[in-house]
Length: 409
Ligand SMILES: Nc1nc2c(ncn2[C@@H]2O[C@H](COP(=O)(O)OP(=O)(O)OP(=O)(O)O)[C@@H](O)[C@H]2O)c(=O)[nH]1
Ligand SMILES: [Mg+2]
Image (cartoon, rainbow, N blue to C red; front, side, top):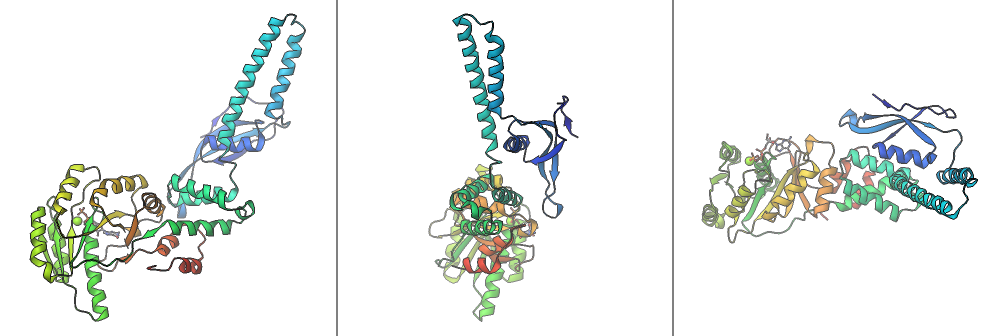
């Protein structure tokens, strides 16, 4: 429902509509086009459907009328001032009254300046070239954070000429390249043997499943190369969740991998020392804790503080997590000194701008992506191209990005 304004002005054109991000955005657009020669006659919130009709976005629609005889704001003020002086001038006979009039004019001028400044401040959004506005909308639809979007817009203004900004294909291509450059892929670094791999992260993100996928992939790759089966052992330190150990054991049984349970740093150390000579890889599965559960996260950290194991720690997060939550997960799991991030449940979302924005902001690299429940099939090493081809509604030059972002640089 529109909330309607009541008064009407005689010399006006017909009513029109305009859509913006919010009321001040609509006002800024109107000011940009008509100065102050418009009047809002109605306003309402509307919802714009996102990609394939999913993910509605709140927008604002205003109805407005433009005055038929435009008068610039400053002119109108000067006119009123002249009329004011003319009207009062006849009766003004002494300097005191004149001084009062001057003071009043000064006040009015100050107020008007302030108003104009406020309007100008609000106007800056609609000053944007159309291509920047369009790219910002695309980035929003892909759930990039406001901070990330602002950086892209600022860079576009700084690095592209007005002519280039008119070419939307070029703008998209440039932005896709910049997004690609902001994604850090964790390098495949050589490690000490046995290779200790620990997955940490919030509850239910897929840590245990991902460990099974990683172990299964190692076995499959060795088979494919005709190499001997890697010697793997898995440890669970999950004491809190019923069935956590069973879940890991079930995967262990299928792949013929032994599973141990550890309750303390001493347990982990003992298991490690008992088997380290005869193992290639140790996987350590951990319980999931809310990022705000500092107490349990702290205790778990102590359990994993074992001299000499040199672990590769991965933070596991889902692609579906909100940007704000990703920030707090990264911050609160920082204590594990994780090397890189594994992004799970890629199959459960279409927008990955949230992950790209937060990882780039926090300077974190990504190592693996998992995109389904099947073990071990649904895991792959992270690739920039995978992120870019997932961008919704962007025009992607596949040959160009394959060339610019080759795998395993
Ligand atoms: N769709 C989808 N589901 C996944 C993926 N990875 C894991 N899952 C599912 O997510 C659920 C939780 O997986 P777990 O491996 O138990 O998660 P966890 O992080 O070990 O959970 P906790 O140990 O309870 O913290 C299971 O139903 C998995 O099948 C994925 O990439 N895509
Ligand atoms: Mg688990």
